[in-house]
Amino acid sequence: MRIEITRSSVPKIVAVNEAIIASADIAREVQNHKGISPGLAWEAATRALVVRELLSQRARALGLVADPRSENGLRETNEEALIRKLLETEVTTPLAQEADCHRYYRCNLARFRSPDLYEPLHILFKADREDQSAYAQAVSQAEITLAEVKRDPSCFESIAKALSACPSSANGGRLGQVARGDTTPEFEAALQSLEAGQICPDVVRTRYGVHVVRLDRKVDGGVLPFEQVCERIAVYLEASSARRAGAQYVALLAGQAVISGFDIAGATSPLLQ
Image (cartoon, rainbow, N blue to C red; front, side, top):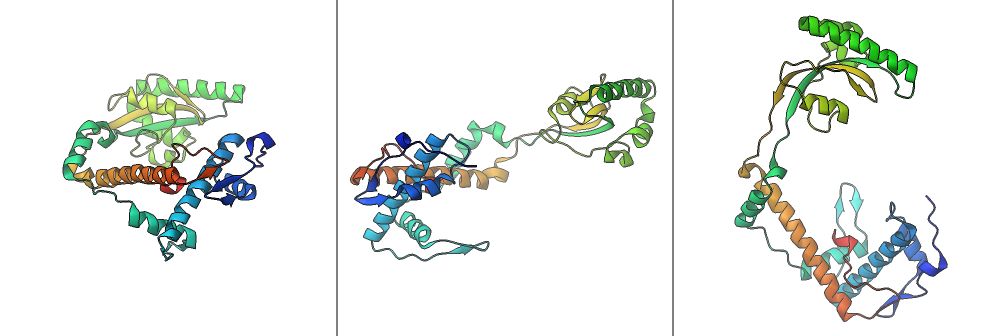
């Protein structure tokens, strides 16, 4: 994707304590901020480089020495290692206490609920929704089949093996256990409306075609015990605390620096996300 920047949106000179950040460097950094408008991408890229320069200058002022680390085959650059060492040296993140974890758990129980699980069977009559004739034929076939399995529910699996266009036909139409988000919204809505052992009273239309659906079993989700999630909560709380502490540290450095060509007030660093 080629990003065009108008002259009016590009600061003439951006500097941190007289260290100039070249427009060419900002333009290269823009590629790390795709998915937003060109103007916002340029602003985000400028902010990232200004913050990086602030941190690098502080690290050099303290006389820190870079000690690059490698992980999963990737090696830090000297600048990345220097900034990491600076943050380890000057930004203190408190460990999450058990009481804090308990409080977060009690206030966010919905986040720690295991999902409902469904064990459906289906018979798929495959058709492209854009092909109106083929889709109408699939609907007709599915409705005939639905009427048949309603008359004799015991024939569902044998019909699935004979007629379904899904690979699950080899297993009588069984899809195994599925949870929210595993299937299309239409199929999921149908499952949520059914009781165990019930055949969906209407055919289900999705982008894959038309389905005859039966729900064999449903396992209701429940809230996971605190002991099972406390470590995950602690990691989350400490990461959130680290982001806040990092943002405050950047704001402190910015307040002590002379920054021209860019307003960094309230900025947080992508390096600290």
